Image (cartoon, rainbow, N blue to C red; front, side, top):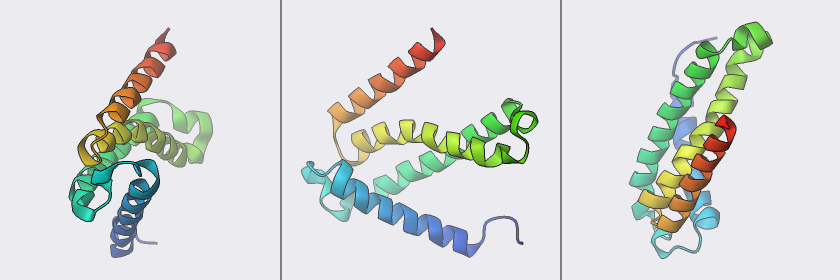
Length: 123
């Protein structure tokens, strides 16, 4: 098995970003007139790349910053990645709402909910 980034992985991510854009435009941000065209695709890709970097960094922090390998063994990598994906979505949703689809109220409420959840976890 080959390690690293292969052309099939790059193509899969490109297809995933395109499908994600279409689904977000159709369902998540459907009431927004600005979301109707493909003109918002490049900003969406930029946010998706921010999400990719966040997922990667959070995954590394969870896997190597916590003793996941000692706790759950070989499952540490997929568990860290799954948790990082969920946490990164808390970052990308407000970014998409604000910069891609222009729903400032959605971005503000999503950011407030994220901060409130974070504060509740520390209490």
